Amino acid sequence: MLASLIVALGLSLQALPIDTPPRVTTPHFRFFGDDAVANTVKRLADSAEERLRRLCVPIGACERLGGPIDVWVAENAQVFAKAFPEPNPMSEWAAGVTFQEARRIVLRAAGTSLFSVAETFDHEVAHVLQYTFQRAGQRLPRWFAEGLAVWQSGEGIVQRLESAMRAASTGHLLSYEELAASFPNDGTKVEIAYAQSALFVRRLALDGGPGGVIGLLHDVGAGVPFEDAFRARFNAEVAERFAVALEALDASGSPFYLLWDGNFLWGFTTLLFLFVAWRQLRGRKRQIAALADAEDRAIAAEDLELARVMPPTRPADVDDDRNLLN
Image 1 (cartoon, helix red, strand yellow):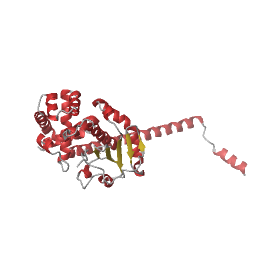
Image 2 (cartoon, one colour; image 1 turned 90 degrees about the horizontal axis):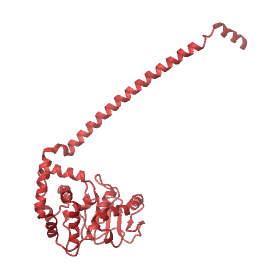
Image 3 (cartoon, one colour; image 1 turned 90 degrees about the vertical axis):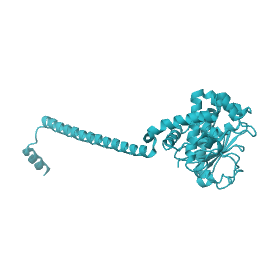
Image 4 (cartoon, one colour; image 1 turned 180 degrees about the vertical axis):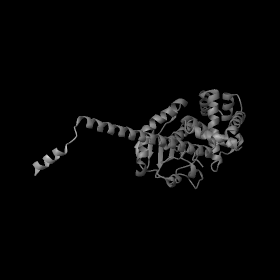
């Protein structure tokens, strides 16, 4: 299964060396990691402040941050798993995790096949920014938090769309009740849950403008219950809007299953690559043949020119030269 990004709520760091001094410090971040991830830490730190500004300015959260955000870069999957309080299936597939109350982010240094470490960083920072709008006893629904983080950071929307379209074609889309009651943390439903959440938030932003989604976040920050704030912003119940989006996704996905199926795309891409390689090889052979023909013509022309300007050597001259040498 493709790795995804998560936010872990209410967890505490376990085996990470929390007393280790930071490797790099910026105005809003403290980066930690051993020598094996030094280059990754430096690359992240070099762009961290600009990435933070790009994320916080649109939602009006730059002044809400407060203290620094700690970012731990795990060398491998084993080190990454140690951040979780107990054996947890999320540690096997997650690319990053945010411990919101502690303002700490843990990332896999190598990223995943779907997300680079920088894209994962953006996603997790988005979660930290979201937390600044949450009040005691008033949390954002998990589906909205994940969908909003994808929308904020602009990451992997095509891949998530592919997952959702493929799921639509096989009848495995999740209902709003499933997402709202218990967001999946393992199994094949994880990828579908992330895809649907991201696409639903994106649809809200397209239909009502970004201001509706951002305003919903601010309403929750002001203490308005999420369901009430959603109803006021979008003139509908969440379940109603979700059902409409689900129906549209299902209808648009089914007729184009092959276009979104990974096996079909892989096979088609392989054939296309072989065809292009064959065409290039033919072209190179023609170029080589043309160069060889041109070279032969050039050599023949040089021979003719030499024959024209230089008289032939006489055998007698050769004999004379030999006599002189003797």
